[in-house]
Length: 186
Image (cartoon, helix red, strand yellow):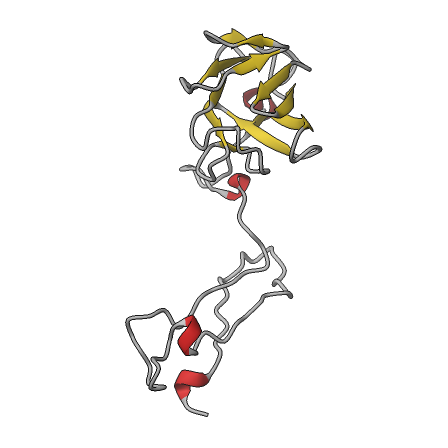
């Protein structure tokens, strides 16, 4: 078997505290239909021949922030009606764009195509005041808070219902008057 027809497994080096992952998946990519070799059977360097496929997919909460830690959750949105019912998304400090695109800070990618891909709405957590606000994203589709349209930024309270497209979300704050991450550092 020549070097071009071997399958290689590439794994990132896990941190010392993490056990190695047991269920990595590999595929032989050295065929004409998957790139790697041309129709003549010779290796084609212009097409990818190795891909890393992991059994663990990254989530927004896995993304490290500048100080080497993780983004701290300020609360959650829980899908109570519509596609994705029972799923939750973390709310972070500052401006959180909501949409079905994967690059949104709060991605609602459960199949509701009536949600805009980008910036359908914004959920804001002001850490200095420990307050949450909801505002529309300037799209043609409305955002509703407890049944009323959101036409300007509105404050959020525990248990409020947010309607975006055909999806209803329940707002669950973590940070507020009774808890802040700053106070928990001491």
